[in-house]
Length: 119
Image (cartoon, rainbow, N blue to C red; front, side, top):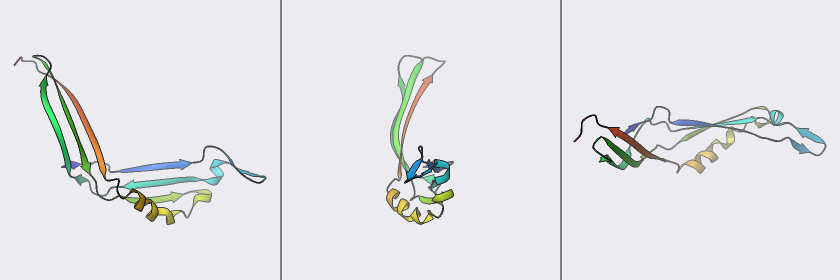
């Protein structure tokens, strides 16, 4: 089992270049910004993995390695827009459906150990 302190992320999207519509040119700030927050509500999540520990390099140094993954709950999505991108909340269910299978969080852990006493 694992406990995730913050199981969410926010994506901020804004155009880089101005957009032209005929003779009208709109700056990215005029078009607006989209804020998409993805939240995995469950903080406690199952973990499966394989690890090797205390692999000795010499009498004092060793290393550890573990590879596994967390199985996350189905995410929820919140969409907010500014300026011309307001009222894009209608896209929330489509984004949730598109990412519903993004539920695996891979994990690779590497460690170095030093022992003051020789074995």
